[in-house]
Length: 241
Picture 1 (tube, helix red, strand yellow):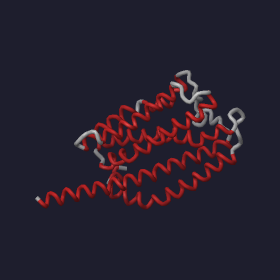
Picture 2 (cartoon, helix red, strand yellow):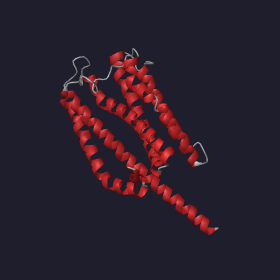
Picture 3 (cartoon, one colour):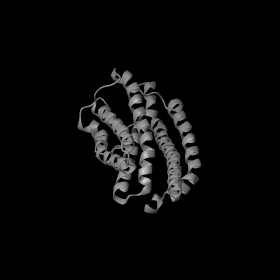
Picture 4 (cartoon, helix red, strand yellow):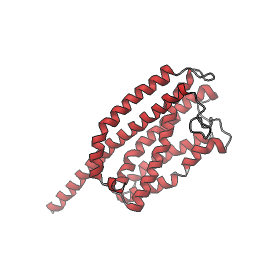
């Protein structure tokens, strides 16, 4: 895997895969939304209000997944000093923040008819809000120092420290008495959601992950191009002296 950390090799692979990733993301999004909004039957308790889960649940899963990848990239950056790890972190963090924000907003919309309120200081909701602030702090630290290397190192430390929040989010519904429902998909005894409702959810989860990959490829490509331009400018200025 270390050889794929080379920016040029990564860019060649990413450029070749990008059209397929984006096309598949669009197709699966259409299929998932059709299955969730049209084909899936109303829930016996929540009626049609449950359909917001086809956006809420995949964005919540992705918010956790993206932050986990930030922590892995932070280890790669600090220990092995992979040049692509810092670039990936800066490219992925804003996307992760958007997914986390969408999970919070759609959760509030879903919670209003189910709980009778937009927000409660529930363990799951509060830990997700903390995750959103961690994303913002991670992104802000990159530009908080004059030396980009110091900013990248500070952001990496935040990613590693903040990763402690991930198991808290995951197991909060098991550790504490919360309004948020417990896990209903990834369970040792199997999913509790009927297959007719489950398959569109899984399709949407894959579609959003592919969309995230497409966004990261675009942002990483832009960052690599910006770095090339900066290096050429510095080289020209040095030669001019």
